[in-house]
Length: 213
Image (tube, rainbow, N blue to C red; front, side):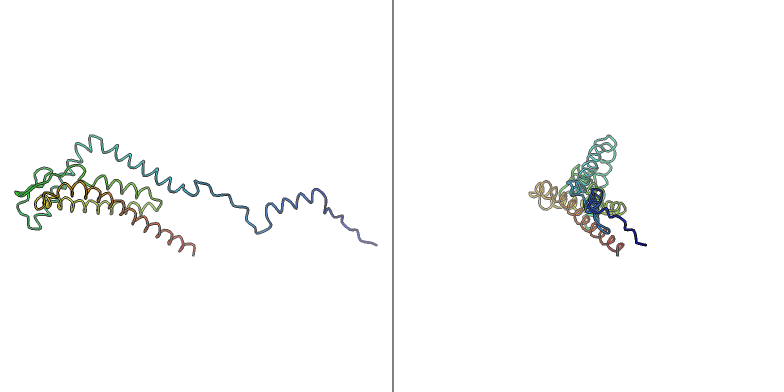
């Protein structure tokens, strides 16, 4: 006639162990404790950028010492810079300016376009920084092409300005050539990368936010 009562196991060692395990793991809907952030979690992206940048610049310097680059590409490229500079100067009413090999020559003054005045190294610096940046590959490739074209165009302006300096302001030529333009060009390459990187990262974050929304 009476009902049988199921014996409770509360207070037994097994029950206490289950309760302890449940409390340590967390109840339903609770996330497990987060893993502490390590140094690599915080700085890993910067480290990958730095290592990739160093590797790309090392590849450039190794490749620039090959006979193909030294004996074929650089002479052709310097000649092309001189030819383009003469064409621009003639457009701006300097008909007596002519090209002689890698030199821009006129009766009033002349300059020679030599290694170091070709914008190749600053362009390599820019391209390496762009390709090492942690953004989409398509964005990096487009930036590398457009930025290099812009730097090479600025270098053409540098050559023309140095020629005009050799004609009209000879005393300032060495300062403009060695002190002003050399430092300015490296600064321009870094500035161009920094502006692009800030824009590209901001753009990708906005795109990710739009996708999550």
